[in-house]
Amino acid sequence: MRVCARRVVLACVFLIGASLAPPDLLAQSCGVERWSVKTGTDADIGRVNVASSSPNTIVTMRGWTAPNPIPANNRVSPFETTVWVLNATLTQYKLESDSDYHLILSDAAGNTLIAEIPLPACVGSGSPFLSGITNARAAFNARFTPTSSFQTANIPVQIKGVGMFDFLHGQTGVAPNGIELHPVIDIIFNPTNTPDFSISASPGSVSAAQGFATTTTVSTSVSGGFNSAVALSASGVPAGASASFSPTSIGAPGSGSSTLTLSAGTAAVGTYTITVTGTGGGKTHSTTVSFQVTSPSAPDFSLSVSPSSVSAATGTNATATVSTTVSGGFNSAVSLSASGVPTGASASFSPASIAAPGSGSSTLTIATGTAAAGTYNLTITGTGGGKTHTAPLTLTVTAGGGTQILKNPGFESGNTTWVATSGVINTSTAEPAHSGTWKAWLDGFGTTHTQTLYQQVAIFSTNHSATLTFWLHIDTAETSTTTAFDTLQVQVRNSSGTLLQTLATYSNLNANTGYALKMFDLSAYIGQTIRVYLTGSEDSVKQTSFVVDDFALNVQ
Figure 1: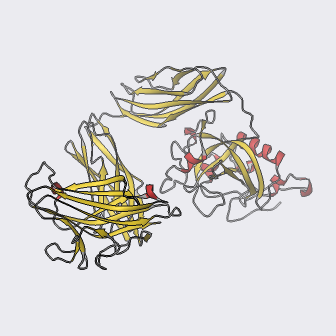
Figure 2: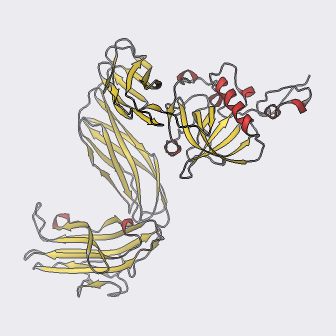
């Protein structure tokens, strides 16, 4: 008898006649990091319904946001509390040092994701995954003999496993967010296409205060020629609450969606697992929804930003989604703003305000402009109904925004490369340049007048993005706050001068002190020769000057 002592957990098996032992028993080291989650002995294992599964795709799972930090002995719902089913290609496999079988799954587009089958001897006897892991390991051993080196399989498989976010450490085939199927509890090689349907709910976790209701969407999809109506039902609804479907049945062929309304009513405060079951065509499948009943609260809203960290090169854009949710009967528009934006950059929301009752989302676009490279801590603020909430956003600006392809972009070489109405490109100090001494000054006469400025440029088909920026100053003698008497149109035209798109129209109503940075995405014109074209027009009285400088057309 001997004692095994290592820095990793060991499952010690004492073998008599090792040559007679299966290869599976020769690798005895077990894993450490999140091992309880990987094998089903963690604190949240009761939240996983092994009897229910939901179909998914590699590309969808790779798009999930990884938790930060990743919990050591808890699960992130619904990603790690759901049994997922993937149809994919098993491209490669190997035996890892922690005795797992490391499987690399790939979809038709080449997106990859890791699945792992632990050694049953490394799984606690109380794990609800043990039986499935044992069967999956045996099925794999019956077809392949894994070694410590990657071997090629290239075989269609259907994998059933529980989601698990792993720490990124350069794993071969890893998804960018570290999501895996770990453990695998079933594997089918060369799966047949029999009539069937699948069922899922999104979102998989909802909440409502007592006396209020919430909804989730139950969706079904069919395969293998399945053609039958699917009846829906819900179980596990707490006393005092209710559940209803609209519609109550998804008509043949069985693919569609239904809205599940969960009314909290007088149910006790707590979190409940609602099992949604679909039945039809001799098949029954279910999925779960986590339903949290909370105490009634004062009217309020919450604010979040996703992702919480964005990055963009100088002269390009970064985007994030700002979302709000309401509670306690809150019913007011929520206006949005951003602070901490670096000098030279700008932030805009679309829409700028989330309409009453205040639940929705807005796209935040940060134009990095001429901001210096660095990391900036922005604060996103929502205000409405007497409440104010904030959320942080980290912006990283990197040097360079690609290659600038306009010639003489700041007009410092005088009236060259640009085609302009006589006198537009000048050094007059009456309207100073944004930088240097030259700029382009359109109109400003106070009489009926039209002046133009353009440069023709080719955007190569090898580029994958194109961004136009320039600085604009508008000075006017017009006093109207409602009528655009004088205008500047920023256009894209082809090499023959035919109008392709009007990017923006500015007027005397946009008069500003100093210069403002303008930015446009021209990626739609990759592979074309275009003209960046400006037309300034004045009416018969009261001048408006449109002064532009420091153009850039950055391509990557």
